[in-house]
Image (cartoon, rainbow, N blue to C red; front, side, top):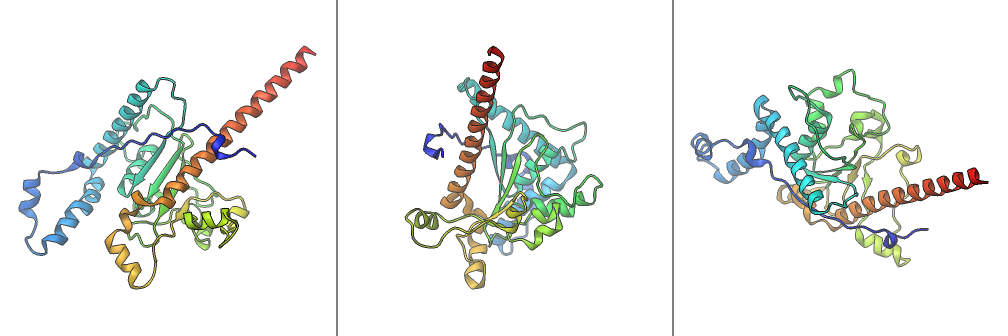
Length: 289
């Protein structure tokens, strides 16, 4: 069996910032903001206003098109710097960024046609995502084209969705029950902690959880939950208030999960290429014989 160490892999990470696209004049915002409880109002202005801007007819389309343009520019620059690049591209989308990515790939609510990305996306890693709430409240699931008995979900073009969240993140929602109500009976797939991985590797400690019922029936998993925080009691509430929605950038468990996911896909691609090459060689040998 091929080991991960045998797989040639180099990972490059870059970021785009879209928050400035739909910001009104700070002077205007300050003039209409009440002076009471300034700390709380500052948090609301910095977070909830992004959602309000995005839900507006004018700013929503502006943001989606601008994000697509920024992504195309980033990938084009990388390809120009590394002309031999033939790898895959995954997007890591936090919070409202996942909703923007969803609408961009689905082509929703864009007048005059959708946006065009100049590259193929393999994975969408949505972190702390309110995507499911947006899809539900906008009425997407009531559209006749929405499938309510699916056992998998991919975006147009084939990108796979991973909806990853901390159990105490107040902004995150499950996605699987939207495509099939039976998913609600299944817990999200737990991302194994690095401590349990080390224990399993050394032959001791608690073993990783076995396949869930969804895996047993061959259903694709979309919802994944981290184990790093307490999800009940006072500690759960304190974590939700403090940093649950922003914990993903420092999560080693999440980093390891994403790395293993990409490696598994890379391994599958290499094995398929080798099998195709062997089959073609066998066919050529047969023709010569």
